[in-house]
Amino acid sequence: MPERKDQLPWLQVDLRERVEVTAVATQGRFGSSDWVSSYTLLYSDTGSAWKQYRQEDHIGVFPGNTNAEGVTHHKLPHSVRTRYLRFLPRGWSSKGWIGLRVEAYGCSYKSDVADFDGRSSLLYRFNQKSMSTVKDVVSLQFRSWRADGVLVHGEGQRGDYITLELHGGRLALHLNLGDGGHMSVSLGSLLDDQQWHSVQIERFNKQVNFTVDRLTRHVHTGGTGDSLEVDYELSFGGIPLPGKPGTFLRKNFHGCLENLYYNGVNIIDLAKRKKPQIYSVNDQYLVICGSACFTVLKCENYSIACDVPHC
Image 1 (cartoon, rainbow, N blue to C red):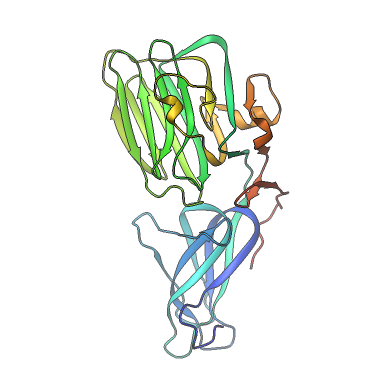
Image 2: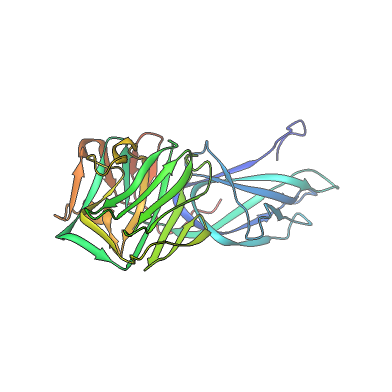
């Protein structure tokens, strides 16, 4: 129970590891007239940079309790992967004061993570000289503390290319299928906030669906081409060598990539198992690990417990 002079009380929970939280529950203080009638929920991987949880209708305030003994459950419309939770009371008992007991529900979360420091990158090399596709799916989660940097890049000699990059804190997708089929689209803002963000790119012929944190843009490429032809390799985390004019001006990515998939291939898992399709550029600056939590500068391994701790 906070002191009455506390102008901004909160209750923080350390789940001890990064887990997937699917629901929360609250209860008032035992044997009292103290409870919280409404609250906002924040989450964080570090305990320092926080993000407010918002429901599908963008409402950020959760209804709480009407007495001290009842339990109010809330199943989260979309789960969050986090280590820390913070409950901020917005309303409380008129008969007493703020009293709060909480519980978190969820499951362990396993992932493959690569930590890039702005000098390293991963190359996924094709079995043949070039790869021509009419359908592509790229999915990943990223976390960054720099506003600019290349996450994905590939290009072909006939002028085709695909680039996914942070630019000014926004995520930009550049795609050219040749024959005038160039398109660029941006989503998000302030994505260099050290929080995890999810990305998915789905392309079938000229139709492209670009999703960042559940916000999707549907776009069509122009021109007559409907296939993407990339030579030799795709790079992740940066562009290791100057390619087409202008590519060398782009900065490498500084941050973490998690569960990186290209057309069903788990890129980071291949790197972790040192498979020949993956080549690491400046690998002395690259950290590959399994399930991991992060400090600002490095990725640290830890083991995941079977059950989410209750608080």
